[in-house]
Length: 243
Image (cartoon, rainbow, N blue to C red; front, side, top):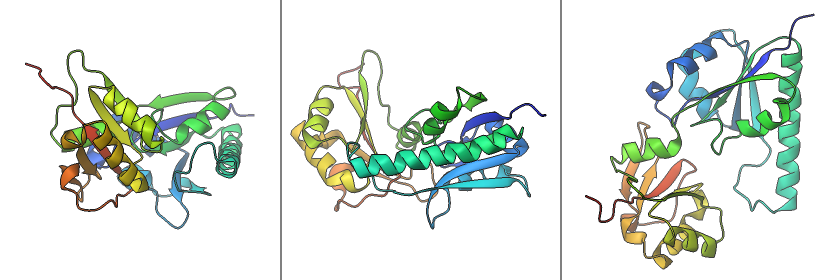
């Protein structure tokens, strides 16, 4: 009987394939199984980033989300459906691991930072060998695309999900020197109001699809509408009064 395989969480970075690490490329190319998350009916963004490194004939395991909107985390229906999805996905990976196959799970950005891989890791790590390959985070890609220094010295940097209630967003924005707001999407109107309430709207930078060929960077106050894709981030740089 063969030894169980290894679960490998691989960060593929924020979008530009050239930002993948050499280690990520090597492990993807050597994998028995490559798993990737996607919305039903859509291609996996992580799979597109890693496309050049997936060997022809590699067994691929698409993991298709049953729900895709950023619903309130305390919604019972959402929590039940997404928990069942992660449990089922972990079982599918476990079958390959038990057969002695190494499984690479592709993750946009970094696997352990707001990534779906984490939900598989906590279910499987107690039972199988694991390896994590860090990746360039989406926020790092965005502030690099914007060529904007984000924090230095004693600046406090807060990373906030745009799904937070508006009053919490405003309070946390006001209490930080520099801010990154993720999970923008349909939350943009609320985020804009929270930034205004915190007195930070004039410093906010909107970055869409950072590091990608079709990326966009602009002052949020100059954006004429409140539509935003999932791959968008808002930056509020620190550095106020710094030498």
